[in-house]
Length: 244
View 1 (cartoon, rainbow, N blue to C red):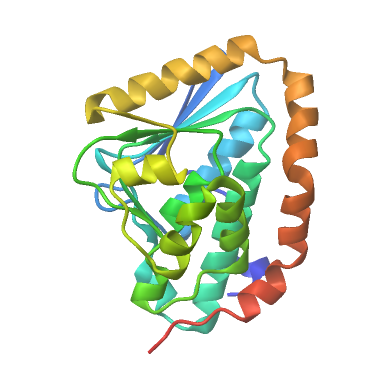
View 2 (cartoon, rainbow, N blue to C red):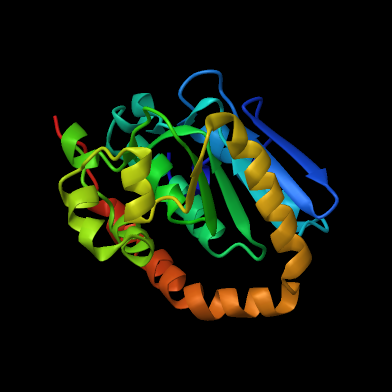
């Protein structure tokens, strides 16, 4: 499947969008591990399209109980080089879209957040995480995949320098407390408090931030890196492979 053949953004049974006043909420729940396949990614893309066409001034993205996202769908990532690159490219473009989104993005990190799930944490503005026996981070090197360049740079932008090598090169699984210290998360609460607090934070941001200055500052802070990563994405994908 080439980039032009990647399915268009479309509603997904695993992705629910609600817009309440100025706050839009995306809930991702596939009933399993919240793996990111084309169906889920397309559902999130479709939700973001709807949000950009609305009057929403902040976005919340929440996972299912115990699972924010286990990362890309491994059945696709191991189906061959081209299917893996197609899915990786789609995920990269979604991450960059969230990184540059024109309104604040708040994640309710309801549990495990691994691989692309961990990368996406570095694309949001505020990350509210759940306390508990959860694992967060980028295990790619442990499971036979290189960390793509776009992910390296997004993580470099958001993570504490002292955790950077441990999290990416050494593929460490971090506890929620370690993820907070590393910069994957901004706050920890009990699991049942994650979604309500994320909604509260988003509502406060929607009310307090001026939309125009927010967009201008967003472009100033993140535009150059996002453009650089988009321009380099084809080369980044060409060098990606899964170990046998």
